Length: 354
Image (cartoon, rainbow, N blue to C red; front, side, top):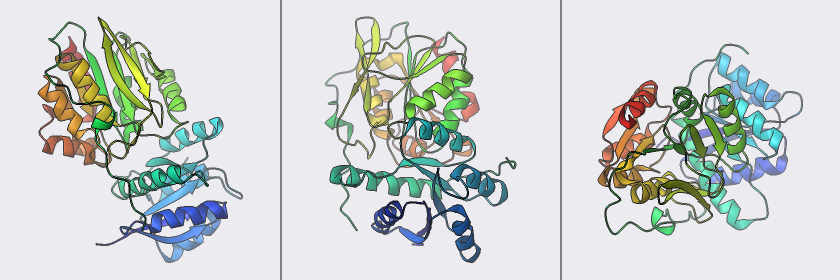
């Protein structure tokens, strides 16, 4: 199988070497070259075009955002942004997604073996997802991998079917690569009094708050990064914080979220499978499950559990996905009731919840 050629662009020699070591450990990935800034990267690309570029944000001579704009307006190549997780860096990285970056990954925190091993899985998966992405031009402006765990490590399967249907519905959503733009389109379509929405978007710690704030500023509904025990209420969307699992819970007539630590589930934290299983258990027929663009199979098992519990389940269709992996896995496992284009999902949810 042809390997995915990666160009690493970062002004830190330590980060370049660490990233190269991580990527070289995956048999499907080849480090084509490294570059200390965009000018050196451009020279490397004259002789060989990479399949994926990893790109730092703050660099000498030219910043990563400017270089990203040049790439995406001239000859689009999948770009994965790397960032230290400062508050300003988070906002800058969110801007990079608007300019066409496929994914954001976290620079490894050197010296922490457990973190580094988890990062290895995330980084390599991000590169593979980026290599499959559908791109659009913008206008000019070998280490052992930890076992893949299921949602069982966070929440056991329910022994019986969930509660009977009530008048209150709750919408749970899972997304990964390409999901930041898909969620913008989805959430902008809702009126201010929409059903409550709970979201897992694969995104590193530090980015989800800026992402939620950006959506809150452009949507008619309220959008916030979820905190433990937040109420799940009409007119509001809660986004799982990066690096924490999120579960939907119910106490009497009140839905709320639980935020908790735990191992990676389906190679992710937060995991869509964890959210969907909790929705199957605590909401049952009262839930609507939506799985959007992303690589891998996180959410596929949980969506089947939701369908078996009587929930309405919807997958984003292939034509509107950046990467069709997650919806396709849910479809293949028999977990979806409907397959819809992105632009039609919100309206269908509103009709169902009415």
